[in-house]
Length: 341
Image (cartoon, rainbow, N blue to C red; front, side, top):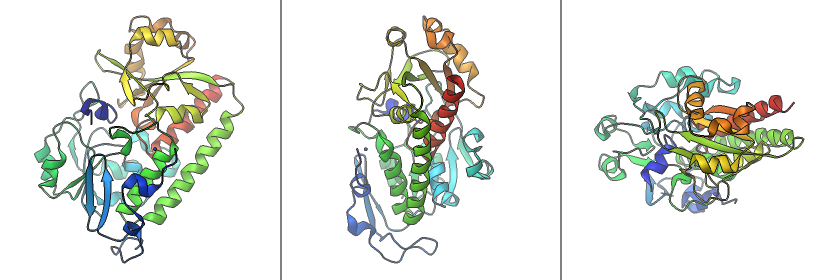
C-alpha cells in the first residue's frame, strides 16, 4: 500500500458479496455459539482477507485500539464501541452531533487518547510501542510507524478498510455496506450490521430522491495540505465519487482510477467545477482552510469561489466508507438545496 495515499485518507467494491470482500466463505459465518454478548451467528475461528494480510479471529475482539476515526460510527452502530480501550487521532465532536448519534460524542471523548498529533498532510504521528502497551487484540488503522508484523508479534491484528487496499476498484455504496457487514461478522453482530445497512440505504434513497429534482452539475473534492504544499483531489476509487453522485453532482476527476492524487491549480482551473468541497480535519468550521486555499494561484478566480459555491467539510464526512459518509451526503444535499433554491 502507498502509505502516503492511505493515510491522506485518515490523514488517511459493483456489488461484491460480503463474503467475497472478507475473503471468507459461507462456512465462516455458519450458525454456532458465539460470545455471551454476541448474536451467535459467527462461527470462530473466522478467517478474513484484509488487503495483503489474512486475519484469523478466534473470538470476537475485546480490546480494540482506534488509529483512525472512521470506524467509530460502525462500531457504535453495531453496539460494540465499548470494546475500544484507546484511540489516536482527532475525533471531532462535530462528527457525532446528529440526533441519531445520541450521546456518542461524550462516549468517544471518554476513551483514552494515545496521541492527537496530526501533521500538515493529515498523517497521525504515533509510536508503535504506545499502541502495544494497550494489549489490543485488534487495531483499526495502520499509520506510518506502525506495522502489521510489529503488532502481530504482540498479539494484535490490524484491520484497514478495503478501499485503502492496492488495486481497489471504483468505489460505490456497497463499499460501505460490505464494510459494516464485515465488522458484523468479526464482532458476531451480523443482525445489527444488517439493520444498520438497511437504515443507511433508506437514508441514501431519500438523498437521491431529493437530488432528482435538481439539475446535475459538477464538483471537485479537495484536500489542501495545511501550511502550504500539495493540493489533493479524489478520483473513482474514493467515496467522494458515489457521494457526489448521490446528491446530483458529477466528480470532475471521476475518470481517474486513483483514490486520491495530487492536482495542480492549473488542472483545477481548467476543470472549472461548479462546486468545490474542501475537506479538513480542523476543530473549527474549516473557514481558515478555505482562506488558505483561496491564496493558491488562480483558485480565487474560479467561478465556484467567486459565486460562493465552496463548502468546507470534515474529512470523515466524505472519506473513507463509514456511516459518516451518509451524514455527509445529507449535509451536502441540504447545502445544495439552499444554494440553488
